[in-house]
Length: 111
Image 1: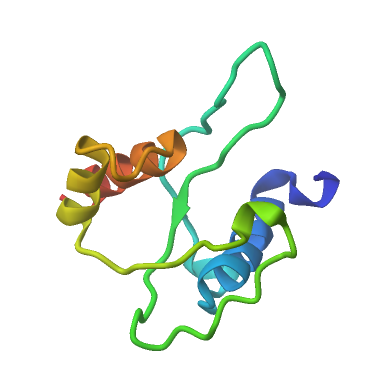
Image 2 (image 1 turned 60 degrees about the vertical axis):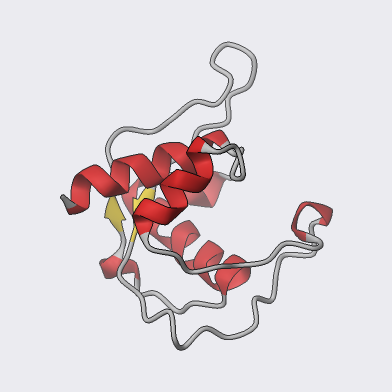
């Protein structure tokens, strides 16, 4: 989206997504970037993912409000140790490429 451009726009979008998808409040200044953006289908679509992270308190989430998208229907959130989440990717239980890339970049960042 036009308003999601530049570092401030990406931080703003990350704050909104954390609230919509996980019920977590995050301040824009807490958002940290995890390397360069990722293009899921280069040459086919202009969509670009900026992978970010922020420290949050997983014991204090609100119920996610969602954005009304059918893509979010039936979704659920789980808070796992990063090694366990990566193991789920390795077993094919998490099959979303951007999530796996994000988890692996975050593991390297935290090491």
